[in-house]
Amino acid sequence: MSFLTDQINLLLHELTTLNIQTEEGRFQVDILYNQTLQLLEDYSGKSSHFYNHAYEAFGYSQDLRISYSRQALLALRSYAEKKLLKSVSSFKQAQIDVISDILDQAQTLLNKNEVHPAAAVTLIGAALEEFLRNWCVDEGLMEDGARESIDRYATALRQSDKITKTDVKDITSWGGRRNNAAHGYWDEVSDKQAAKLMLESVNLFMRKYAPDI
Image: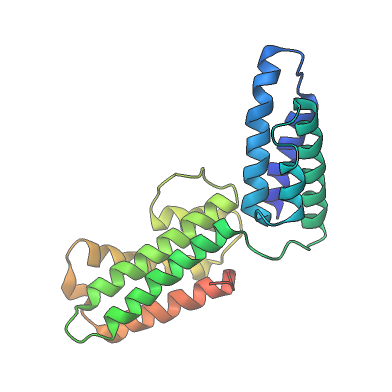
């Protein structure tokens, strides 16, 4: 939760030091209030007490929006620091669902004798890449919207001690198979059993670090 608390602390600092007596300060209120609502929605959901408390100030004075935003952020930070924030937000759940759907599609393709394993390998690689990218963004290792290679994501996670050296070797191997499939080197990925093993291994890796998948 360190990335979350860092985000909360940054917003709290900006809300606390805001000078609404200036034109720029009054303009910043709307921006910070919307950023607060977005963070609360992402990490606790719209139905949470944190989000609803901040939203109660919607349409009211700037002082009230600042006050309610700070109260909601402080409460969420306390909750996170006590390890009580266990459920994923609807936004995070959507990311998990996308990755799971891609892996399910890969399994379906592997069950069809008439489909070359390269099609499934490409999908498995896409799911892995999305998983690693989201992880890097969540940890603050990369900006949201950044698009890098599977190897680059693995390097960033290893440098911050999120994964092991063995994980990096596995990821490099899976990424190589994905690249072969994507670039049409189908002879390199024609073994269906190897593709099935890749799917199982990637699934195990993801569940090791994200049990919700």
